[in-house]
Length: 348
Image 1 (cartoon, rainbow, N blue to C red):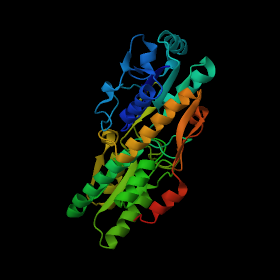
Image 2: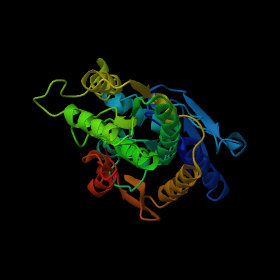
Image 3: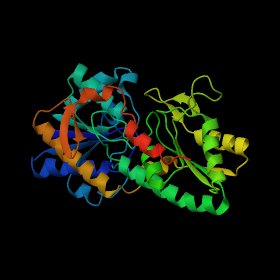
Image 4: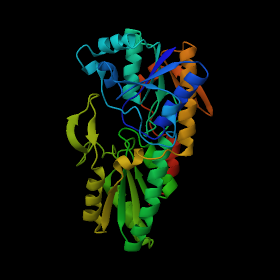
């Protein structure tokens, strides 16, 4: 068979491991020809943005971050005749199946193309936010949590040395998985996430209580999408800019600065902010993410050969199983309440 593969949306650690697995098993076991589509959906909107992938091309990519196929946040449904162009180029390239590696936006496009235009797709879930429904974990998440945890560990020493409050802003637009797990692992004194609008007064009170106990420093971890309750000053998201991308998302960022400013103003304590930003999704993937991405890639190429189109590979417990791709159009997967309540025990 002639198989295509693309990576869309934000890059994350483990993408190259997934590509490697698809190509390696496709060629070695099934005798496939595998075509890499460059820059996500953009590569299927423009004729010629392809690269034939062979085993030599895969050498040394397992440990590499990013994606050798590059990526973009292109939405074919926002382009004139976009879906029809995708369909035409799939036929022109002779693709008998397409492995789509992405998050909710990229896989949402894949589902619509399968449902409405009969494009033969199989989905592979990736996102550092771990907010994709239908799978227990997405690859990229474990690496992001480890990077954030290490940063929190390092910030503890400088916070304690200078008796400072340090606010650490991590990624998480609608779900605070990174904030909760990194905060819990790193011993944060407060974790603020989108699922639980926070009261700045309560945050300051918790920090004051720590000072009264002789703990003259604090670490506050906040997800970029955390917000204050409706009807309060500063309610809603903090955006770096109001322009939206092709999927209607504004670029979030800045809640850490707002929070640090308010803490200093209300408590008088020295407060600093660190925004981890793109550090969380760059660089070498952890062993967990390399293995999960590899398992997903193997399962995806197997699905292609089982005519399992319109499905996504997913992790359920310790098993990789297929689920209907339609699941990605459902409500995002938010932080488990029990996990958040576990973190709450250590607040203040």
